[in-house]
Image (cartoon, rainbow, N blue to C red; front, side, top):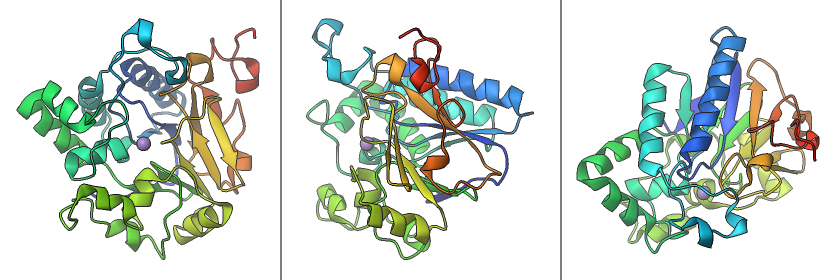
Length: 288
Ligand SMILES: [Mn+2]
């Protein structure tokens, strides 16, 4: 797989973060994408920024509020649906590696919702389903860059990069480590997949090394839908950990040049996933 995805310099780009196995939000994002294809004469792209898989296996009555809207895990189905969508729209559906996917292809096994989520999902899928999912994950990039200035990664832009080559040459196999956990301490992969935050100085250095102006990522949950950090960072929450009314996605004009996240406006670039449930302050139509 190419470690760095170079997005085209025209068309609209829709951005969706952390689905964590939520099929309903995946399907809603596909609706949004297909509407954009119609609106922009077929020139639209859809980017998932990792963590499409792994979800708490909890019954509705025990589901805590901080996990947001209730859903049942459909991790395997989401990955199959993603591959089908990518086949249906060649070159227009993209995904980045998240720390949860990485566990299936050599990274440390995540233990957010289960003692070993990688082992649990692979047991659910069986050997052939697991092989198929790993094949899909191997198509995921580590980062996406664009002429519009936006840089996309799964986690916060805390890695110290000298140039794009540091991402292109990143080793994701885990083969060189004594333990997969050692990945967490690697300066590039560990940060790109796991960093929860980055300082303004770190983010500036990161986007500059990639000739961009701003960093867009998920990984952490922002219950309000999004958060800007300085003018270089936006944390976006499209699905996991949120109630429907706060779920947000991004639509960017790939032919534009954004100076920073201050150029991303609610109701224009920043849109509610479920506008009829979202309050007007998030660009929705619900009476709040
Ligand atoms: Mn993550």
